[in-house]
Length: 84
Image (cartoon, rainbow, N blue to C red; front, side, top):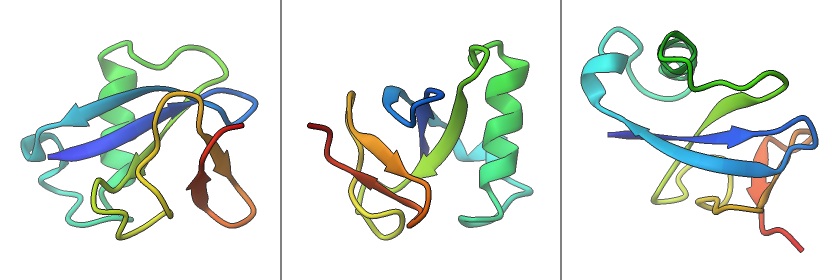
């Protein structure tokens, strides 16, 4: 399973979605798997205008913390941080 966070235009996490590994089979591990997950969610109509899906790690092995609703994505450091 791979988890993705839906981030709005202000880099605030608005949703989380898990994708089965079969959708990412050709992507391998993060970061190569991220574009495959993004494309699948786009194809499924799950990407609102101005939003994007970013892969995150439940174990926090990449991109800082495992984000929750309202947390933020720090683009400069490529990590999720707790919201205010």
